[in-house]
Image (cartoon, rainbow, N blue to C red; front, side):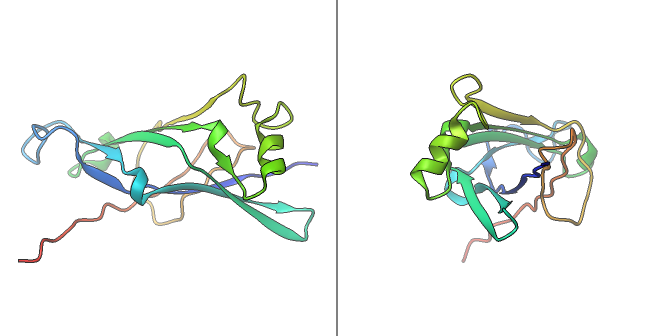
Length: 145
């Protein structure tokens, strides 16, 4: 039986990590993923009767964003496999086992973009394929003043 795992990641970003990389710079702005306002989650069908939802609670990443030319942008994310949570202790232990993620042998899931382009679809990743597509929106905060 072939199982497809879809991962939905809402990645909000913190202010630029390096103030010297401003809009006047020729380099992309560097952002850290703000874990307090982001999530890395997944859902998978279970025996055709229900859907199991879960999340990874420990992760970090960096986004290099070039506003003038988004194709020069990149994303890298690292996820701690042991942080998986499906609200079932026994299932989480099984998912960490060699039957699934083998967290003892492979403690981190890493993602590095190979290209970035403007897109208008939800972020998803299919474990059965070698390519992932993700989209993200940059939110701009306004100060009340």
